[in-house]
Image (cartoon, rainbow, N blue to C red):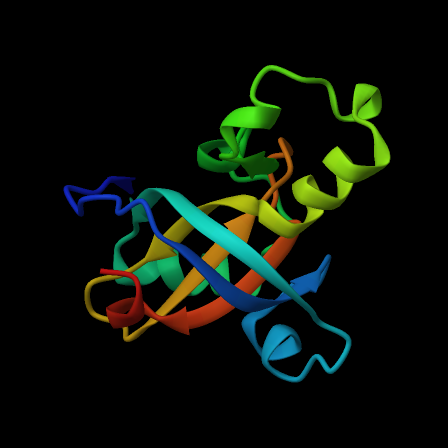
Length: 136
């Protein structure tokens, strides 16, 4: 496991996120997803064995996820403001332009990639599956 030399692009995408499911198969069969905007802030490269284990244990502790994820918004007018202090118009803007701050977990030998928003936890709380090629 380790940080990748893949360059993180400042791109916001959309994806179907599953919540609190344990395996890749559960996520692939989930019809209760939410479509959310996301930005990949970091790539985590796993070897094929670790990637396989991760795909079967999203809800287990993964130290490389701890403290990552959450929600971001790049609008200059909202920078430095607490969400709860925003007026209704500013909140509407926030919702329109906010995104999940994600980690992309991938294996070079696999075509799939897990886009994870752990929301600060050490497990894969929200997962979107995409082709690794779509992110680079």
